[in-house]
Each structure stands twice: as structure tokens, then as C-alpha cells.
Image (cartoon, rainbow, N blue to C red; front, side, top):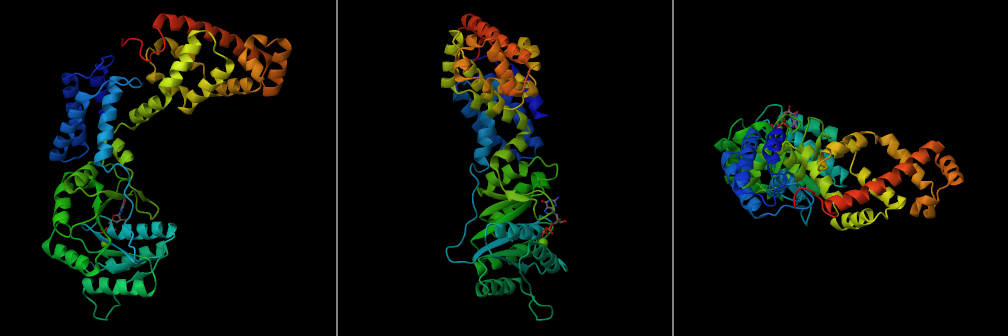
Length: 441
Ligand code: GDP
Ligand code: MG
């Protein structure tokens, strides 16, 4: 996986003050392969890599992250940026109804999306209506009616035998009906073809001209891979669109189509579909897609946690206290809670510089044990936490009873605390705390 490959390349970057050009090039090569594997189109990959290199060259190594993590962070930030940064919301008309037109190839998931959108819009307090303008496939109208029923919204369809064979006319009448019945959003389903086709595009253009939609959503199957660029370009230059919906993200596609479509057309991705059921639908999250394309969600999570945990000021204050041997049990509890917020202890091991020698000790700190420690400290008075030396035998018994543990557990904690405080003073002298990475300077 990319994670493995990058980790091995980036391992060499550890401990350098600034990223060297050779390092960046080596990293860029791996990322390039990964993007191509995720089906991102080649021209898009080129542009992307160029901007990554540019940015990486100028960047200093951060205090919170090792250089490897930092390069990944840059790549991820750029990806999120290209994918749209913040999620764009649906454009609603000032004068309802809001008209949303769906366009895309056959099988992209338009009709399914119509139902998903309807359900989602209802959940947001809207009163949507669907309009069936796919008169190409025999069952298309029925399919939309089924979907509409499931979503609990009405479907406007041409009556059989009333001579309505014109999708543009159906669209127009549908909007009229929505106004009359006071639906505030109308979703217009349209026909697609297996490939881009002039007649289909003409029809879409005519429907768009007739109903003047507030949004034209280009619906695209995420599994489409390299072909995404051609299809998106054709629709962009043909009917044109204001936003993109990615479907079939439940498949194993890595989602490179998202990056390609976004980059080539400049239009934002609004929604993502990830299954056949109406609930399998959500607004699009650029950050989730970025980590999917990169295929290194775990590493990104660690980076985020490391940054959160590394509040420089707090670390410095704590370090000073530790170094001077003035750490109290109150501080200890605070640090422990901060640490636990980051997740299970085992996950944190990889982030610690020189964790090797501490691994055994930390391995004993299972979660249950931490719960117990927390309970014991909570059972102490402020004075006891501040100066644990005053915790005599009778206080130990009281604390043990109060927090539901044995006296030996309390003894254990207090003794360990004194040991830890002593060890920290010694370490502070050795490494010159404060400072996050002992071997870097
Ligand atoms: P349309 O031709 O663009 O209207 O596409 P449809 O809505 O008819 O969908 C084509 C097929 O893809 C149907 O079998 C849907 O159930 C399926 N489909 C649509 N969206 C998704 C999705 O997000 N995930 C999966 N797995 N299948 C989907
Ligand atoms: Mg359809």
C-alpha cells in the first residue's frame, strides 16, 4: 500500500531540519504512483505533484510532527483543498421551487439519487417532488415512481397514452405542478446513454434551457476510473453543470475520479452515494475522500492526534514542572486525561520518539488499569493531589474505600508516582527539556 511505501521512503527523512530536494523528489514519485493507482487522470496527477513539490520545498519541519508525517500532511491538505475544502451546500432558489436537474451517463445512479435526494431533503424540512424526464428507457418512469414511493414523495410522470412523449414538455409541466402544489424543491431525472451521445446531450441542454434549474448535478460513478475526465469534460462542455455527485463509493474504487472531475471541470462535489439503499447517501466530505485516495487514513489520524496533543505551551509548562520535580498528582491526572483523549495507548506507541525502551512499561498500562488510576486520583482531596507525601496509611485506606480499589492499589500508584517524578527530573537533565525530538538538535 501507499502507506507502507511512503513510510519506507519517508523514514529516511526523519530527524532532518528541512526537507531536501532529493527527499521530496523520492516522496513525490511514490505519491505519483499512488494517485495513478487510485485512477486519478495523468494530467491531474502532474499538476498536483508540481504543487506539492513547490510547497514542500519551502516548508520548515514542524515541532509536532516528524518530517515524514509532515510531507503526508502537506499532500493531504492539498488534496482536501483541490477536492473543495469546505463542503459546498445546495443552492436554494429565493423564489421556490428550487429546481435540481440530474445529468449523467446511463447507470451512473441518477434515478437512485433522485430518491436519495428526496429523502434527504425531506429530512431537512423540505417538500420535494420528483419529475420523470427519462422517457428513453421503457422502465425508467416506473423506476422513479418506485423510488419516490420509498422516499415518500410524489412523482410527476407523463400519463400513459396522453401523448406526452417529450421530456422537455414533461419537465416544464412538472415545474408548473410543483408550483401549484407548493413543493419547494423539484428534482428532475433525465435520460442517459451508455456513452456520451449528441442526441442525449441535446435533450439535456433543452431541458436545462426550459426549466432554468438552480443546480445541474452531474452524477458520476466513482468506479469509472480514467474515463471520468472524458465524460466530465463532455458534460461540462455540453449541458454544463454546477455540481457533482459521486456514486458507488461503496465499491472498491479509490476515488481518483473525484479528484479528476473536480480538477478538470472546476465544479464542486456536493454529495456522495455509497450503496443502493436510500439512506446510503451523505453530503460530500473532501477530507474523507482525500484520505481514501491517499489510502492512509490511519497515518492521517495519527498526525491529527499528534498535533492536537502537542500544544507547545502546555508541553513546555509541563516539562518545566516535570524537570523541577514539582509535578503533582493533579498534573498527572490532567496529562493522563489528555493522553487518553488521543485514543488507546497501544496506538500512541508509534508516535513516540524512542518508544522502544518504554514499550514494556506502557504495555502494562492497559485501559482498565488507567480507569483505576483515574478513580484513585479522583478519590483524593486537592491537598493530597498537590502533595502526595501527606498520604499516610489512614488516608490510603479512605481513598481505597472511596474509589473501590484495594489499599495495595493506592500504594502502588503513589509509589509509581514518586518514581515517575524522579525519572522525569533525570530525563529533563539528560535531554534538556523542553523539546519534542531529542535527536533533532
Ligand atoms: P441511472 O441510469 O443514472 O438512473 O442509474 P440508476 O439510478 O438506475 O442506477 C443504476 C444501478 O446502480 C442501479 O442498479 C442502482 O441500484 C445502482 N446504484 C446507484 N447508486 C449506487 C450506489 O451508490 N452504490 C451501489 N452499489 N449501487 C448504486
Ligand atoms: Mg435513470
